Length: 120
Length: 219
Image 1 (tube, rainbow over the protein chains, first blue to last red):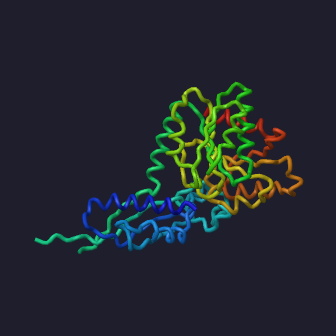
Image 2: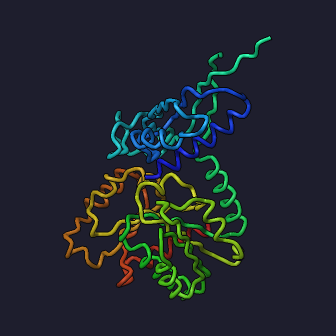
Image 3: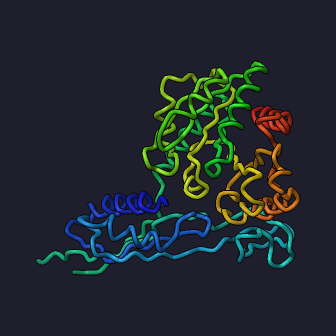
């Protein structure tokens, strides 16, 4: 259960970004999380409300895009999606695959903010 | 008010990743092989490491260890019995080690004088997988008492490992440990991984493990 420290890092990062947009309000924070990243969306959502309290992120929504494992199959010479985490094998030819191309991501993709429009 | 989408594309653990990259450079420049040992609580990381340190020192190698636990310095005291320099990292509730903790506990150590540095992580098969410590080799340990399907239950950790160690094989029979199934499960999660079957008590498998360490240091 390290989701709280993950979410705290998100809060720090977004707060830092927001310095370039004075007065702006965060509406949504979008994450990309690989299924091998060892974080659970429910736990992230649970921690998000607590970690954002009293920050510029308070009241914003957390949107988590979960990314499946993609590995390169040397036999088929293509990237394939691995559906089961209990068997790292190419779904086309059945050969074991160890060259992972996706699935460990743990990143902030973007944030949606309401900016203060300057009035002339 | 205007709505705007700001693209960030930023790693959430960027700070840790950057610190780990810095540590990795330092380790490589110093010529020290660094290993990160991960397992459940109770697998026998400390006993395995104590035996490894003792054997390395007996062969004239210089090895040191950092050991992470929530509380107590019991493990550091056990490991120090090997004669190797050891430091305890107490995380006080945090379920994994982070690169910053490792960096802080290396202060004053001459890395250039070391051949091997072992980092025994907090016993936890989930969270430590997300945190790079700058190690060259991540070793996932599994004891014969834990069940052959442990790798299937914790694929994120076993898939991120570079080597696997099965511990306590001296009591395998008493636990009805199914060796073939365990090896097959490890290989399903991390195809081609090197697996060492060991006993810290009898010394079984230690020779092969030590040879692997020497090879990895040389490469």
